[in-house]
Amino acid sequence: MKQVKSLAQEARIPYGTWGASYFPAWQSSPLAEVNIGQFAGEAMARILSKRKVSTSHLDYLMIGSTVPWHFKFWNATVVANCMGRRIPGFHVEQACATGLQTVVLAAMQVQSGASEAVGVLTFDRTSDSPASVFPERRAYRRTEVISDVWDNFGFDPSTEHAMITSAGNVARKHKIERKEIDELTAYRYQQYFEGKEKGFLDKVAMPLEILNVQGKSMGIINEDVGVRKISLDSLRAMRDLDTCVTSGTQTHAADGMATLLVTTADKAKEISTKPEINISFVAKTEVRVLPSSMPEAPALAVKKLLIQTGLTMDDMVVVKDHNPFAVNDAVFSKVMNYDWKKMNNNGSPLVWGHPQGPTLTRVIIEALEEAVELGGGYVLVFGCAAGDVGIASIFKVN
Image 1 (cartoon, rainbow, N blue to C red):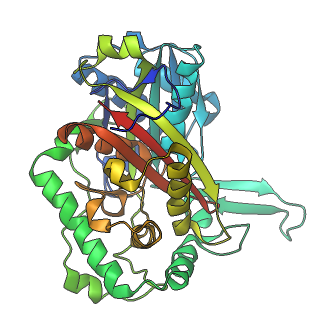
Image 2 (image 1 turned 120 degrees about the horizontal axis):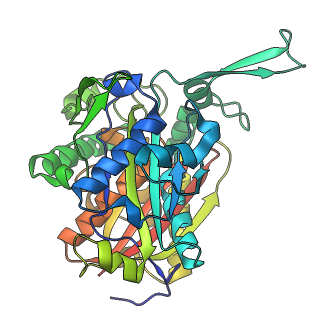
């Protein structure tokens, strides 16, 4: 294995100190009824308890979310209280890059010596997203009302286009054909259900009970509600919403949370469920591409990252991404000359959904679990974010 200087030499991700809720589609589960910050804090404590890791090890908490939630002003402190640990922390937000960005920032917190063990907790609830009222003197009514999720999906103030437009633009630019997109999507569903059937998801997601304000059960979330097997014929029959984009070849809004820990090397050995596994940070980068070209950005971020590290795609044992559009993976394959069938084994957000904040955190967890199954190596995780941004990072599993 090639040796590359680490992004944060002192930071580690202790194996097994992670987990996620399943990601039910928006408005399809009791998660639509809860304060997602409170739920996430309580769920993190539950997950760590099941992993036999005490929250007393944590000295800092970094949370990440994108959709406003009740009492968000109180930031990580109120979520830490819900977790049962009175520690400081702060909030991270970068659209769909939030999960990966939060994990990297946690590594920097450890690398600086400021913390020994940082909890990373990302979450979002797209169900019933809040509407905000802004004073606007230029408007006739003197106010503007914005539905946080749907209005932002539908309108980029820098381009005045919807996010879906970026997928169509990139498909046309790279001459992607609808036939390939349908086949790619069908393959992604096959990967997800194969992973589910062999029990891979059991290593990542944990069934969690949802309680109402009286403490009574509203049900248990024990699957990615809304995900159903889909055939290539049904994909081919769907109507184009834009070039190479149909309702079946893009992801769906969802609710959920995902968490992992970032610690010093010594602390990782102390609390990991398998101390012999060493997970380190190698590198991270971001790029911003031309307006309304979001699905192209991740490929260019990866290209920059490989130049930066001297590694190649052949060095990667696991390749996994945040792919809100199937176009993302087709463009990546074309730009990087990489077979899209070799990436996203066991599942990806295109299939299991898109709660924004925790999406890339779950991708990281799945990627690391897959690397451990394969005996270790370099792990490439990447994705896109609103504003035509691409983010990419490499981890190393020994």
